[in-house]
Length: 251
Ligand SMILES: [Zn+2]
Image (cartoon, rainbow, N blue to C red; front, top):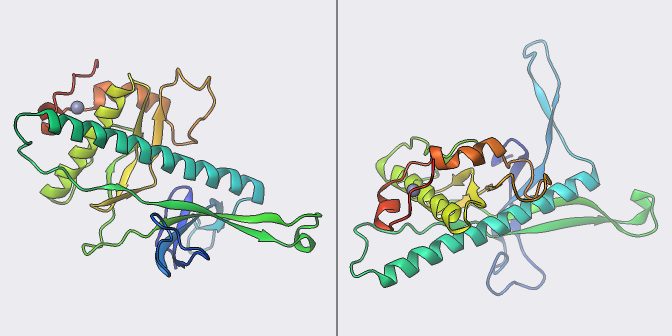
């Protein structure tokens, strides 16, 4: 049973027990609840009842491996950029004469790792054991409200309407972190496709300026050049941006 099916990945529930428990991060406890993610493509399989029906088609070994490593790298860089925004927030508060008149949300990206399945040479036809499958393993998002929310898309900086005021404030806070990243990197990079629960985010995209990377996709398919260019115009400053005195973006 799937936890969810996204545009490029499926997510299934699983439990993780490492041979050597990891001291701080994913795998610190036995039987940790995780989500196992795999890449897929949709293969059309029309039926009489549903001419638009499709089935899940897994990728070839090498392609799957490359894409899973890219997904893991995007998550790693997103975590770093998100922490970078929080470093600015905490530094600004420590220098301010008054505390902010609002709470700073406790939210972060999921911890994750890559799991590889090796198969014996006989099944793969080579001399050495080779990687046959690649998976992205993430701590599982579970919270009492059982909610999974999309806060901001990757095609636009607009904050998406949320079902209640506290989620709306959280979405605005995330837009504010995008503004910090864009400003502090001098317009080079920010995190988009912000989604998850009210405390844990997953499946981000990293948006980079079309001027860097020489046309190479540094962070995968989700990097939308037109959205990056439109960011300064589409981002609407909110009460977080104002209290933290972020400079207006040149729209
Ligand atoms: Zn702003």
